[in-house]
Length: 173
Image 1 (cartoon, helix red, strand yellow):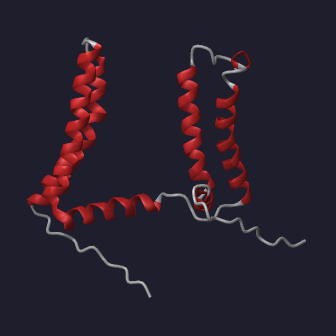
Image 2 (cartoon, helix red, strand yellow):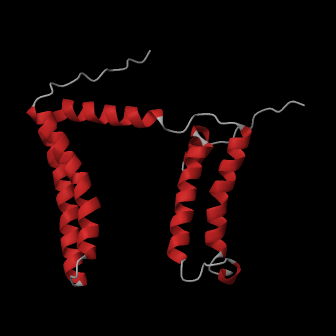
C-alpha cells in the first residue's frame, strides 16, 4: 500500500510571500521585458545582450525564490499549482468522436508542414505568411494533445520506450 504524503502548509510568513513575489518576477521579467527591449531602437547586439541578461536574471531569481521559500514553501507552491492545473488537464479516457477529432487535429499540422514547402501555391495566403501558418499549426498540434486525452499521452510516451508493446483490445461483434 502506497502512502500519500500531505504537504503541510508552511507559515504564511515573509519568506513564503517574498519567495512567491520573486518567483512571479522571474516569470514576468522575460515575458514583459524581452518584447519591450526588442521594440526599442537598439542595435541587434544590444537587444540580444539585454534580452540574454533578462533571461539569465530570471533564472537566478527563480532559484533565489526557491532558496528563500525553503523546501516546505516550494513543495507547498508546487502542489498548489499542479493541483490547480490537474483539474483542467486532459481526461484519461475520451469518447470515440472526441478521439477522432483529436487525431484529425493532430495529423493536419504535421501533413501541412510536410506538404507546404512543396505545394505552397496550393494554400491561399501561405506565401508571405509562413510564420503565421507555423504558429497556427503548432497551436493546433498542442490543442490536439488535450483533446485526445490521457490515454493518447501514454501511447505517445510509449514511442520512446524501447520495450513498450502494443496490446489491442478484443473486439466483439
